Image (cartoon, rainbow, N blue to C red; front, side, top):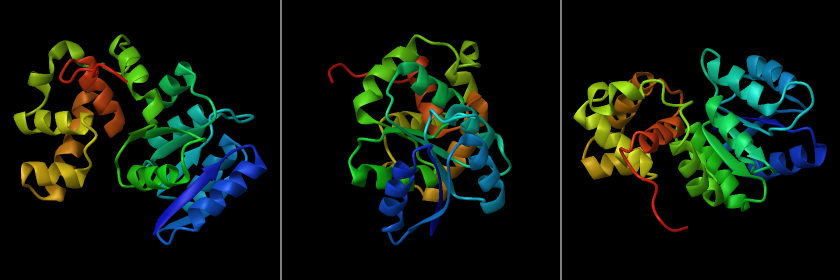
Length: 221
């Protein structure tokens, strides 16, 4: 069972998301907060598997709450669910350590699957934002603190291979099938890779790969 914490300042949105997720047999909504500070309090009490946060909330906003949750021990993965697709919000959420960013007008099935993916350690980014965000991130430096040393000097050949597959959007299971290895082996490589790159999530690792030209932003939509 995946234990979910919700945070949104609109009661109707909280109720709607709670009903949507609770209807799934493998998801349980253990708490719902009206702002970021309440989300942190509930997270400490309930220890959810994932937090789904809005960005614009009174008091402590979703970005600052994300920064606190992902820095907690153990860290709690965060999926941002928002009506705003402004680049600064997306950048702020990713830089704070969010594992996923999704617009609230996404299809219900997409939201449900994204919750599962993020809880399982897999990042997700709204498809309507992906190319624009990656293109912009290629030109930014904030998420590549170790770029100057070069990827080849940081990662093993296998880690570079897995990073490339992550950037193609593959899950742990798909990577394991592609490389003909156990899923636990893939997870171990990813766990060792993240601190080497100075990032906190698989999604940030993918951004790092684009910034360092290990993979390139595809042409087209």
